[in-house]
Image 1 (cartoon, rainbow, N blue to C red):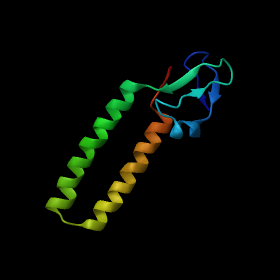
Image 2: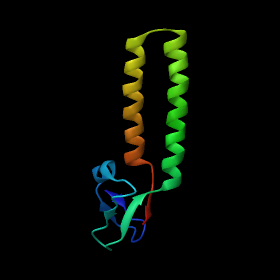
Image 3: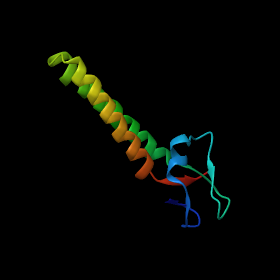
Image 4: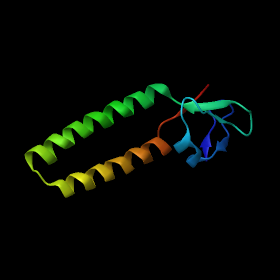
Length: 94
């Protein structure tokens, strides 16, 4: 469970966040506050991931030309970004 930014109680389920968008906020069960992603952190993480993909493409596909390693690396980095989204990016009130 994650803490609500308004009441600071652990009422928000972690896996609800994976379906959370700026258009579809989650409502805290304790204080009825609408909660969503922190827009600043979402932008920062998106930029980091795009830069990582560009770097990873250049190093592992253009220079090394190993397609299987490139695909496995993309899958692993995608999974890592999902876990960062679920456990690290903070919530903010909507």
